[in-house]
Picture 1 (spheres, rainbow, N blue to C red):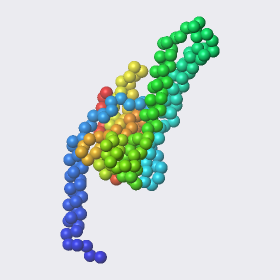
Picture 2 (cartoon, helix red, strand yellow; picture 1 turned 180 degrees about the vertical axis):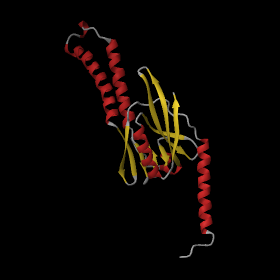
Picture 3 (spheres, rainbow, N blue to C red; picture 1 turned 30 degrees about the vertical axis):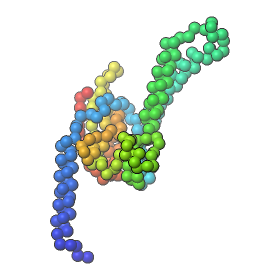
Picture 4 (cartoon, rainbow, N blue to C red; picture 1 turned 90 degrees about the horizontal axis):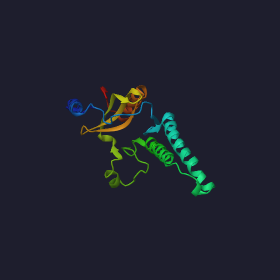
Length: 220
């Protein structure tokens, strides 16, 4: 079948315009860490749930880390509150410091469970990247929420490394960010396993058909 006259020129021009727009966006994108800090261990695993869906799941390390905080906190609360129900509460002194300690640890563990297990889903059928426990079916409600992002607005995947200083020393953490067509960014994961970050970026790059932009490492 003969192609229309000028067809190839139009295709070449369209590709050049798309490349020009991408280069223009790249020059506007910040190369500093979007979320300073980050975990020193691998927090999430990217899996392909179906040909049209990629999902981040918490790693075993993240689950154990959260469980330790929650278990220690609940354990301290249990051993300090149980005597109140077994004996005469008037003769039992309450260690408020340990109760506060237990509440802080249990609260931290529960919060980490909430953060680590919060869905991070790339769904081609819906045309969305969403981070919410309860998916909203109504488009108007999704547009009003920051938990939903159109896959069409993603133009690249960004990897940034940074040195994080802590009381126990220093370590490197790596961000995987989504670059949007307005040059803004959305963080997806941030942890210390570079090999996993690169593998995730390659999976997302192929899935979304967008390039990977390495921003290097930043001293924290």
